[in-house]
Amino acid sequence: MNTLQFKSNIKCAGCIAKATPVLNEKIGEGNWEVDIMTLKKTLTVSTNLNETEVISIVNEAGFSAEVLQ
Image: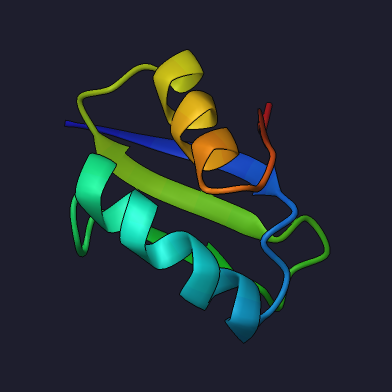
């Protein structure tokens, strides 16, 4: 399982609540978290999916993500 990190626009508890159903279904409950206290709003994902697949799932949830270098 890989740990991937993304800069996201999931920026508050309300955003997390909106994204949770999709992310839990597609990535798995407990396999992702968003640190809304950082400037980049870092989304950390533990998954076997690739970066493009995770970005697509985040988009499906109504948000955006880009890979952190």
